[in-house]
Every structure is written in C-alpha cells, then in structure tokens.
Image (cartoon, rainbow over all chains, first blue to last red):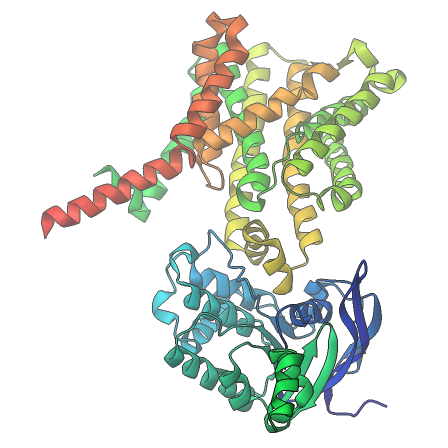
Length: 255
Length: 323
C-alpha cells in the first residue's frame, strides 16, 4: 500500500504513440518534501512523463496518485488547481502581457482556495519575481526577455500558483555557470524553506548531482535506475545509457 | 499638448462626460436622417465591441458572429408577434443565443484559428437555413414584421437612438470591467498561450464559452433593437455575413483589443460608407476590399495603437529635446 507521506505515486504508467513506447510501465514514488532529479538521454520520455502527470497527455495505461487522490485522467487546469505546477522546456510566456502580468495570471489562478483579488495577486507576483531576481524587469514585455530570463519567468509564474509539487522541465538549459549556481540555490531554497516537493528534469549533470536527494533515470521510456546521486553515478546501466554499450565493453576489456 | 490632455484623469472624465451629454442632447437638434445615421453607427460600434471581445481579447475570430444578431432579431420578432412585450422578447433572444453558445461553443471552441472562424460561418448558415424554412414561425422568405410603435416618426427615431446608445455604453463598460477583472486575465492568458493558461489552472473551455456568451448577448440585443427599429426583417438581412465581416474590419481599423478602437473604427467606417459610398453603390464591396488591404498593410495594430505609438515617440523626442 501507499505510504502516508507519499506526495506523488506513479504506477506502471505507459504512453504509446503507435508502436513507439514513449513511456513504458514507469513506477515510482516521491515523498512529501523530496527533491528528485529526473534524468535520461534525449528522447528517454522525461517530458512525456511530465505531460502525463500534469494531464497534458492522456495515458495508455497506468495510474497517477497525488496526495492519495487519483489524478490519472484529470485535465491540466484541474491538476494545477490541486497544487501541481510545472514549467515548460520550451518556455510558454503569455505574449502581449508584461512580466508582472504573466506572474499575476499564475497568482490569480493556480491552487484552489480563496481567489486572490487583483491587488493581492500583484503583491504575490512581486514576491515571486523578487525570489527569482526578476523584480526590476516586471514592466518589460515578455518579448524583450533573454532566454535565461524567460526560464526565470516560467519559474516565477509556477511559484505564484502556490504549488505543493513543482515539476521543472530543464529550467537551467542555456544558463551560464554562475547563473546555474543561482538557480540551484533557488531550487534548494524553495524545497527547504518553502517545503515544496520538487521533481526536476535536467541535463546539466553537475546540477542534478549536487542538489538531488534522489535521482530517477529513464531510457527509451523505461525506468532503468533509481537511487542516491552516488549510486546513480556508479550504476553501469546508467553509464551505458549515456555513453553507449561499446564504451562499457571497452572499459571492461581494459580492466 | 494633445497627449497631456489624454493623460490627465480629470480632463479625461470631463471630456467623456461632455461627449455623453452631447450625444444625449443631439437628437433634439438634428433631423431624422442624422439621428438614424448615428443610431446605425452606435449599432455597428456595439457589434464591433462584441466581436472584439473575441478577436482582441480572446484571439478567436468569429466570422459568423452575426448569427446571434439574427437570432436576437428573429426571436424578438416572433415573440412580439405573439404579444410578448419588447423587453421580455429581447431577453428571450439573448437566452436562445446563450443556449446556442453553450451547445455549439463547447465543441467548436476546441477548434483554433481559421477552423473556428469557418465553423462559425457554418453555424450562421445552418441557423439561417432553419429560419428560412420554418415558414410557419418566421415567415420564411417573406420576412418577419414587427408591431409598429404608435408614435410619430421623430419620436420613434429618438427612442431607438437612445436604446442603441445605451447598449453601446453598456458594451463599453462591460469590456472595461472584463479587462480589469480576474476573468479578463484568464481570457488574455488564453489568447497569449492556451497551454500555459491551462497549466496555471485556468479552465479554458469554460472561459472561452463564457466570453463568447457575453459577446453573443450583446450581439443578440443589438439584433433585437435593430429588428424592432426596422419593423421588418428578412434572413438575408439579419444573417448577412457581411455585417460580421464589416465589424471585423471596423475593429481592425480602430484597433483590436482596445477599449475605444472598435467604436472609432465603426464611426469612421459608417461615415465613409454614408458620405462616399452611397455615391458609388456598385463599388461598395470593392472599396471595402481595398480598405481592408490598406489597413492590414499600413496600420496592422489599428488606429488606437498607431496613435499611442506616435504619442510615445513625441514624448521621447520631447524628453530628448529637453535634456
């Protein structure tokens, strides 16, 4: 049975596109307050998994539970209302609105509860922009933002929805090393001080290894490993998935 | 200096009050022809405001929105010919439009871009065909006659003038309230990015249907007043797709997604149509086409956006000159 402190439970979740098994019988649990990295080579099914959890795609089979509630066939807006926020790998800013208005849209909707007034939403938006260091850019239109700022905007907007669980899809791609350090401390802060459960997809290995409490590895739609960063770094299946079978054989024959 | 006038809140309030008072008093000073012209400008302004809720705020182009104009006119006409008083008949027209929005809107609003535009044209065609063939109810190709008000013409003209004026003011107020509200944020978020909107917890189906309902109510009330005003309607007349197309053009000309843009567009367009085109009846459509192309090429954001831009430019130049 499910443990009581399990925030998210994914059971034999699958998504087939014709013959392609983009996500193939993936099961895992994430505890409340955990910070979990989701990694895998390109095309491993990470984003598809995220889309299944958030209701943007409908599953072929399997189940998803959030706080012991079945959310398998729930629409994206319902998923957001019960407290799961996400960012998009290819950022989806609200074009034609200012940075502040973008984040206000998150604050006005998001997790259900008493709806905020416009002024309360503005206040919340400014808090979130402060957190990501975007406050001085609040009056810019999103068209004027750089790619890293777009990523920060995505994160601010997701934060404004007051999530219990935050799903981050490559928020660090395109950032410079110093910016990655900032992003890492921000994610840690959200997790530790604001007690938000976080699952993040990332290709920047240094980032994943340094802050994840646990890592889940996908390859060709299957979960191939799960464990602490140290275990994952030593796992032969993971090394093989990233570097190829030939590399592993050569390494073995060389002793 | 004109720019400062626009920015000062007090002056703006005084200006708006002056315009309202002027428009309230003017029908007592001018001839019937001008009262009718102004009434038709108000009507087109109202219809353009209604269509702009969809185009400018939601980002969906309802080419066949005139269907609610026809529904409003026909329902009101049929109800009145059965002895129901005008206000109640008008509400019945609005209710039928709301029902159509809910039943048709939920499936049709899943379609994006031109698919939605074409679907609304289809909807208009279908309902027009029903109105044309339900002869017992609608009079079919013979058209439908409304009871005529027992009053002299100039009184009737003013009666409809004030009704259309009130509806236009209501449409403007509704759009201002929407823009500033939480609902308005939902609508604008959908226009900006529908997927992002859903991820933020916005129920897109409900929001889209709701804004279409507001647009449809305004359009159908305009149709109801129009029918009563004309006292005779036919399907070719009130389901005429060109009414919708003209309103879209007015909206683009004035500026989609702005408070005053569609009103400005309707004003310029109707004046042009009355003053110039009545001389060239055969080229009417040709001129419409030419204007469309010119607007899209030279003022794609509409007059309001172009004016704002030149104001900001003047401001920047002013500052530079000052420093």
